[in-house]
Length: 101
Image 1 (cartoon, rainbow, N blue to C red):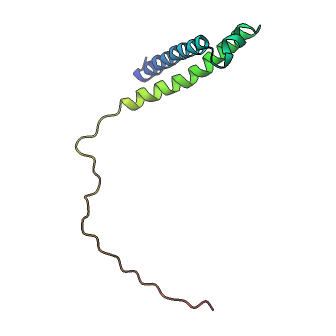
Image 2 (image 1 turned 60 degrees about the horizontal axis):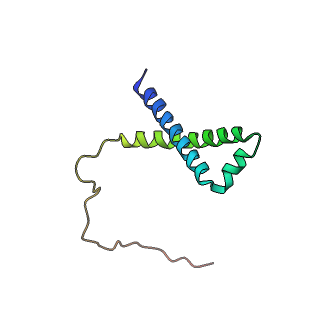
Image 3 (image 1 turned 90 degrees about the vertical axis):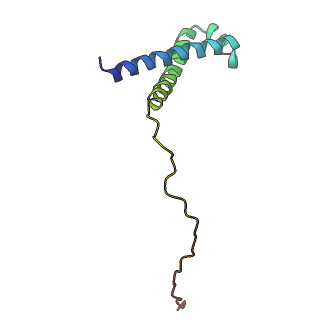
């Protein structure tokens, strides 16, 4: 299996694991009375799976993006750009005056 595919699968698995922890904390703290809504409804299991899955998609995307961006090489040397200019001279710009007629 290519390394990039393996990296993607592992990061998505981590994202869904983080989502499971997040949903568990939401239910433990009873945020927005979700625990009562899920346990008191006959389709609460579907709602629980949907909350986990939708958060899993978000966390998996963030986890993969973070991992890819953290793989960037550090630039060598100072990052300055152009040399600093200390001698400023005003630029002369000529403009012809037109009458409004």
